[in-house]
Length: 174
Image (cartoon, rainbow, N blue to C red):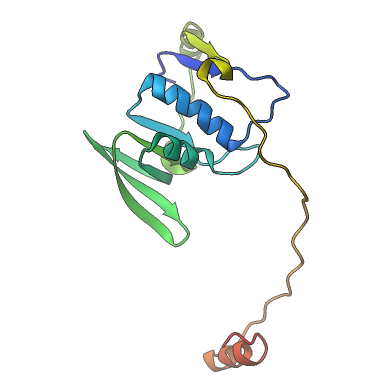
């Protein structure tokens, strides 16, 4: 929504795109387009890898902010609130930059029928990987997929003293 044009990179439908190949395709396009900000999702739905944005930033030698849930863009920098394991972290990056977004970054707008009809008229540039100088190479191989071992159930303790005793005598971690 709101785009003036689109870019479509066509690959054979049997081609398996790995995160590095996708990052190389985006890198080639970014070098042509020279954007000030590249916004990507944090992870793909097919492999759940969560690597393409970080690889793209590395290939372009740009600063990055990952898992962004809020962003404020200034004239030559951005301030991003990133979700981390312990809560939130605020990161400041110079522009141009790459950000990977969390689903809480924005509230999606739903396209109206007139806007859908307008979007059909927007130009879409089509490329093949070879047009961008990118060779799609399979580098990853899945060797095995297995469920993790079942864990023992936890135990509730009544006091700190009991917890320390169990950690020393049973778990042998203290």
